[in-house]
Length: 234
Picture 1: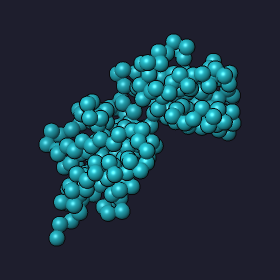
Picture 2: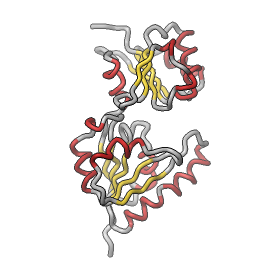
Picture 3: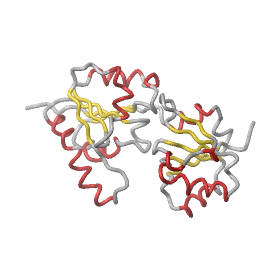
Picture 4: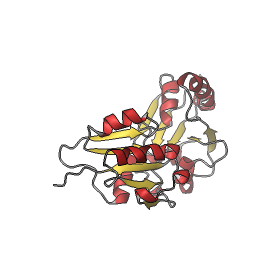
């Protein structure tokens, strides 16, 4: 009887290869199979982050989890995309699934976890998330003392973003992309634009920090964040 392989969800950080944890590096180099999310027409960002650490002898399994799908439509596609990972696990091979940032913080590994963790021994390795990396790259503390920090996905309706921003001390607005103009207009409406800081691809070689009023909405990537630090200073 073949012993099942082990599934590892490994956070590889926001982009700087040196932000990989020691545990993540050990598991990455020991695994016979590595899997990673990759758009159909682009190189996997997660793989690029760890490329210098790969052994060259590992089986690689790219998978594609398209964004912006209705949950019911996404479910069938996601079920199909994780099947090659399940096949390796069933054959007794350990699989490390790479995940940008942290696996359980808006990470692609969550969709693998919900489908396979009940069937295979699973371990999740935390990673440095963009939520930690962006304010450090910007050189601003997010919060002080008992400040409340709210994390908001930019695709939320404008009314929900406004409600949340009115009741928090500090905020991180993620997944900007095509939603940048909506978010910028809300910040101006609420008088928060002067505190808002824009950064894209934090810690990567392509990192850019741009004044909010100089950002070209047509050029804003998915991996961009607006940081609104607390107005409190202690």
